[in-house]
Image (cartoon, rainbow, N blue to C red; front, side):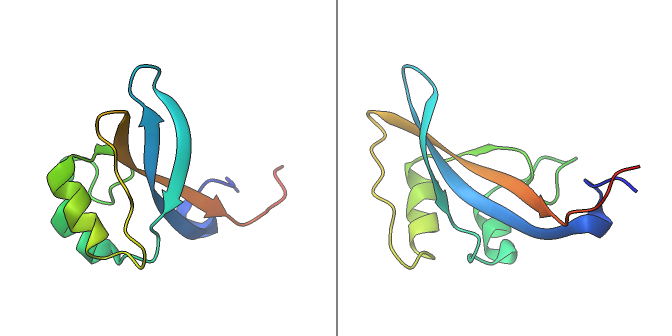
Length: 98
């Protein structure tokens, strides 16, 4: 059985990634997994082949305001120094691979 299959997916983590503009160096990831997926789908326009928003999606000032309206603590964005995007990864159950 493949460890990275949907059957073994135990959680999906969604986060805002902050990266230095000039270096594209990621400096922090802010977990926003508690924001309902249905809300995120109203904020981001999914690619046709990515209905679950697994790809990275850029965040501009307008999207940042929309995201912050759903957060427990708003993110302080600095678009003059950093770029932002929505990132996603899965957490999988541990299984023995054959």
